[in-house]
Length: 316
Ligand SMILES: [Zn+2]
Image (cartoon, rainbow, N blue to C red; front, side, top):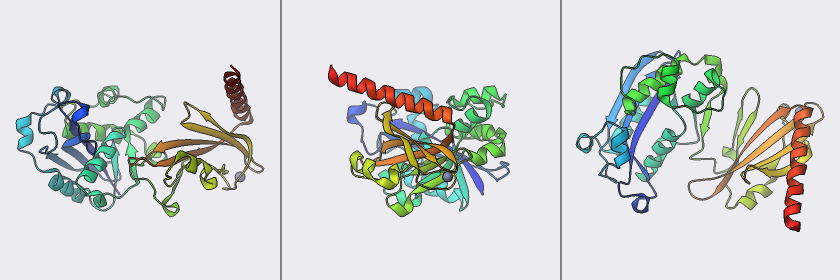
């Protein structure tokens, strides 16, 4: 399997959000990519400038940040042709690598706009190099800019940042420094196109947790009533476990937390995040992991505290 490290530059409506086309808020104007083999050795480079057809003028921020001019882009290729070539160049057996989560999403949104979504079926497993950098070198949670990582690692800085080709090269260089065991256990999943049916639902096993991506529902309520989605399952044996703390809402109502106990494998924490899909439907990302008794007690305490707070508010 090869790695395709890619970076996009995009433009947005130069006249402000009120005038943008909601189907394509960010129009891709440049694709840069580097192909690596499975040992992360350099194989090839891809580059395309794209002639914008939705927003023909550059937004002032786009022209400020990236070194491209409208005249350059007028010489570019049409997105349809460029992206077809790009995906053909990627080959059959590859995994995308990007800096952060946005590039893959905008690539798919642009494909949708041109009704070319069949070229890139989702959900897509990929390597988020920004996340891998944080895991390998920092504290897991930080999300740094690409130039920070390049400086941090003392990698050669021989090109400008914020050009797709150069950024793809830099991202590839950072990726080359990430140890293989970290890459193997920390891949990401892009849910721009999430599962539509129960059969397509996804279960990913990481060393210390299990991630589940549900099918879509029309409403949040329907989702929260689906027993198979809200089930608390043991990460080891897969059994539905007895609940010690029932689901409660944490983090502004987006996260729902529950704790259960498997007689054989101990305490299991379940976090359900409800997300809205591009077309206004709902799906859940559920992560499950084993926790200590101490952690279980802390969560129980928090649940009781939030419940009291709610009741007090009601009384007032
Ligand atoms: Zn178990």
